[in-house]
Length: 441
Image 1 (tube, one colour):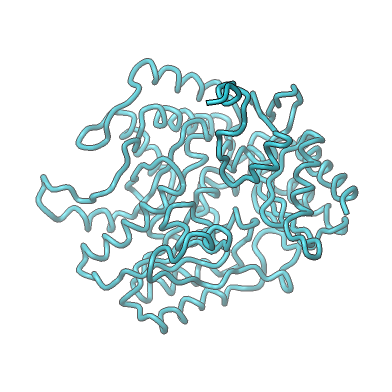
Image 2: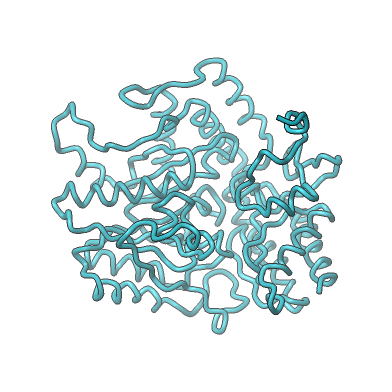
């Protein structure tokens, strides 16, 4: 092997995820430290984090309580198996989590990521119907422009074309609702758009096409994040819930992004007042410090699995690192930080200021839509003719050079700063974007 491949700075061996590898490695952007709202780059520049990492560092970077909890846990119990064994923090965390979420979502299955949470939720939905004697309910319904991670189940129910097109047919029997993005009627909406509740009726079309008795579950993001921050129209989620109830279909909310304060409430379940049957979470549960996910299920679903012999395994599913001790310690400390610093209320209080700031971009070059809720926003740019995504990616690079980290998806800039952000930092993030939009062609 050439010596160059044994040096710590060689970039070639790492096949980077969701990255233009050749472009990155020709001009790398390396982060070496993080604290509070800021990253430090390898060339010793401070870059403000406008994206909470990847929607996950809701409490800001290097929170001392979280760091100390991870360090102490590594000394005390570095790993414990979750199959037929347990450790106290797993049960403590599950109890803490179910106390935060409304209704009877009172059981938690631990995973290691949002992708695993989604695949877990889909498998639970299928197994639940079989346990009830409804084995014909095998069809899963996602939504166009939905993002549900990168497992085979999540890609199958997801609706982002580039995430699907290279991988063949994926899971059989999956269908998709129409997406809710309607810029002709809803451009520059503040919060939930006025128009589009009737789009939930697309589920009636799929029921008529496939038969209700074949459909196990519908999965949607209450607010679609990775596709470019799409808000649910007023009444849409309520209508979807009613149609699922009508036909005995489980409703799954993918709250990997919206969970843990992003909208100013603990969960989108609280924010929108709509009760799903299963909720997937990850990211903010441990502040991104240790990978973790959690799937909430309603009591009736859990109880359905508990009817066999007492010594029988009820669900043949799980992960080597389910409820990993370090992840549980990080999550418990994260929940403490959220409570002690009142970060969910902070998000709700800052949301109007953030809304005004991002909507100040209306009228600037290339901006064709702005949408927002809580501390999340999407700024949609007009694509360059014949070069989709190029304008937004140029904005990403220029913002980084000016000390602001944003995220782009297609031709949409997505903002989701940590909940510790202050008004001056919001001004810096939005002001930098404004400057960049005036510079690029």
